[in-house]
Image 1 (tube, rainbow, N blue to C red):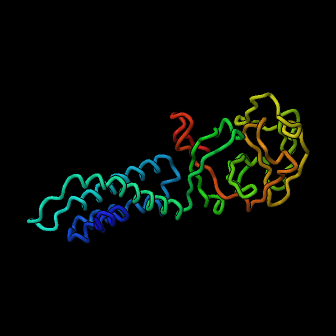
Image 2: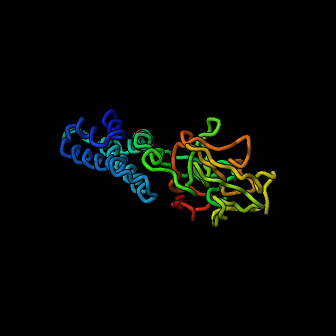
Image 3: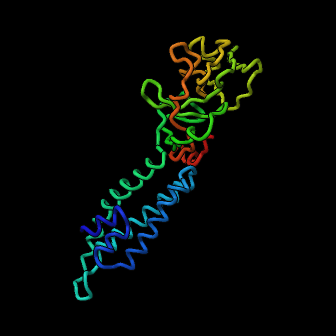
Length: 259
């Protein structure tokens, strides 16, 4: 039981405890390769990388846990009951959640669920997606980038339309940046106009240095920098970049890139 618990967390350690050094070292080696997928490779930047690491974690942990539960201490020991295999299910669940989640957080990734209609049709309510919390520590934010930001202590997603020094204006749902009308294929107007006048007509506004003018893709239903009570967003409020949808409101959206 102790060996199985150890192998559920760090595959191979349970086998070493049971005296199966060669098998334990092999499983530990595979576990190290698994960890390299988180860092330095950071495979979670890609949906395929997430799928690969999840399946690798499941198969490795399940095998190591079962091998420990069904191991004989000596050649003359009686074979353990195969009913013990049932114990591997909760152990594997605990092990994967503990290890995978810890590594996920350690390298700067987070899973997030969107809870409004403000970003349709890029993000729908209920879409679950991965974010990279370290991206904007190493890269500057560009116009039209999606950003995860903390607003009143809660994370949300908006699109950075204008940066510090830009002048932005809205006229009858069209957006002008530095005097030029923007072509925005992501902009969505399901009602043909906003719920409040500021969503269709605002400005001109000059964005302060160190701030972003952000808007939701659903221009008719998004509370964003067009409203006076929301305003421009400080760079420090940006906490990550959305990467891809891993669980969408339809199966076809799984793996959809958000950048």
